[in-house]
Amino acid sequence: MKKTILVFSALIIALLILFRLSRYSYLSNDISVELTIGSIAVIFFFVGIYINKRTLHKEKLKPTQVDYKKIEQLGISKREYEVLILISKGMSNKEIADALFVSESTIKTHVSNLLVKLDAQRRTQAIKKAKELQILAI
Amino acid sequence: MKKTILVFSALIIALLILFRLSRYSYLSNDISVELTIGSIAVIFFFVGIYINKRTLHKEKLKPTQVDYKKIEQLGISKREYEVLILISKGMSNKEIADALFVSESTIKTHVSNLLVKLDAQRRTQAIKKAKELQILAI
DNA sequence: TACAGGCTCATACTAAAGTACCAAATTTGC
DNA sequence: GCAAATTTGGTACTTTAGTATGAGCCTGTA
Image (tube, rainbow over all chains, first blue to last red; front, top):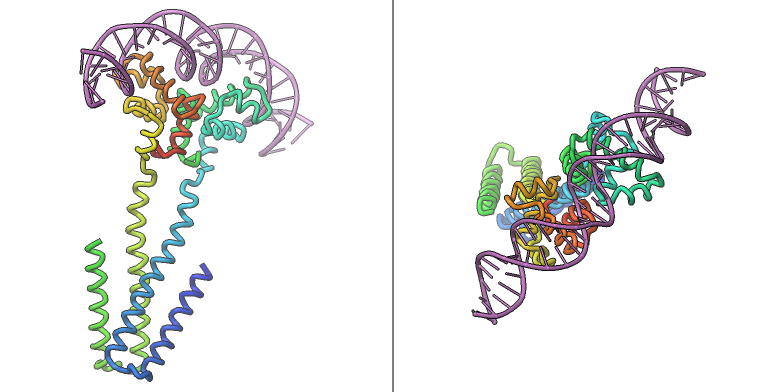
């Protein structure tokens, strides 16, 4: 943002100088003046578009922020949340168990607890609800 | 877009007139000229931002377009795609069967075919892959 | 008309997923 | 340091999910 302001300021100064010079140039008539104004308008119009695109682009890179407060509100523990993420990646209980170095029984317990906390009947429904609640990045 | 161009043109004309008038106004000195230029720059800067925001906002309303060509490429039939959508909504085979007024056996067949076509082992994995392939809106 | 493709459904399985209940080991907060 | 919460894991069971295979019914089209 600092860079943006600097570039912006530099542009304004440059244009003002340009305008000053133009007044003593060989083209010191009405056409020159209107040309300058037009140029300024067009340039700043595109500068606006450019800057806006840059800032909006950054927003798009983090489209869905995880709502950690909601995770807490739902009483979902750290480990349960880990399991939830792996579920959403399409992994089976066995695969999750291997990934987290625990037994499948443990994962089943976590999943069961998750389903209650998310008020879901199935893991697929849990995925959907979790995304709606924004506790899982889309 | 037509409206945008009209507004844009009107603004330019208005500013040119304003500038013309300012030359004969009581403030006909250097400060007036620089003020005008500054105003034009600022105004067009924000016009650029505004227009850009509008167009980008429309893009955001359709964040993930469904890639129907890819559905065809994968050989996923109409009915199978319907089932896929309901799976992604977290529904069980029985629920999908009731929703589509067919038997659970039929849904199982569709799901089995879907898993092969999406190269998935589970329905949760099918959801994830389908979203990655952009054949399901996120 | 014949035939491919899609939709339907059934049977008979096997494999996961999920529930219920219990209990021990750890971690964490006060 | 102790209570509370978390994590872990087990048994036993029910319910879904998924596979394999076969078959009848439409529909568009070569």
